[in-house]
Length: 371
Image 1 (cartoon, rainbow, N blue to C red):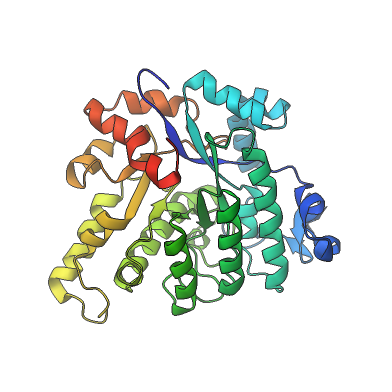
Image 2 (image 1 turned 180 degrees about the vertical axis):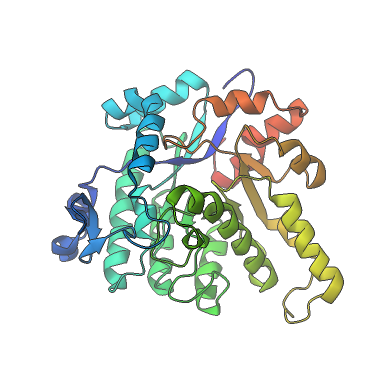
């Protein structure tokens, strides 16, 4: 607790040791497990299926000297935790120091792996299982405070169903997917319907989170640098994912499925709802017969969007959309995140204490199973 507020950080990250896939993958895939290798450009990095896990050429790659220097500076604030290998006790010490009660944990390297389509989806499923088992063991150090979102191999929906059921039974707090099209399929594609049905039945949220330099289609590809690509990729991909789940009837078909958008900020939300409402007013559900209600009704019944504490547009989001639909995140311990200033920044927002309390805790606590 911090200054009378309970705090749930709905987007934090694992910093996976590079050997976890070698150590935890199913033995049948051990010889093909992701591992550090030559990325083909004179540098070593994580590789799988004979290539780096992130794009190394074209637009939106993470290989510039300037980007790596900026990232190194950003990690200086996490030096104590990094020196301890980001082990659970180091994370919990940071949380205690800044009054954070609970975190939802997503992969870092694992998220980049989900940016590949994989030639062998069974290998991807094994990669997901290995990470999920390792992360569940990590979170067992404080299971009521460390809540993990399980990676799902949506490249193969049948395998994703198996992993959703398996990890739900082991204590996952949600399911992590990327917003990008995979194998030519947007999230609303009918091939995903059996997966969404299972996610809905399991009662755990679908957490949508972009990651850098994917092989998958990304709005970041329009830019020539990682920084400029990153500026647009996270919010634009989130916006498209939200629109597609609403307009193509996914929420109509699966009305109990909760969606949480993280690490995309929240300032775009009033405009995006406005944009969808304008099209509803013009054409109703023309071309989209499964859209039975206004877009904002679907949003308010099924979605949460995570904000940073320093967003100057946050009062407008709460005023125009409502303070019941926003959660809080810091992106700990990534170099571009807001830890530890994000908590103080939210406390300083020109918002009622009741709104800050909802954003810090109330809106997300039930969704992620913390109390």
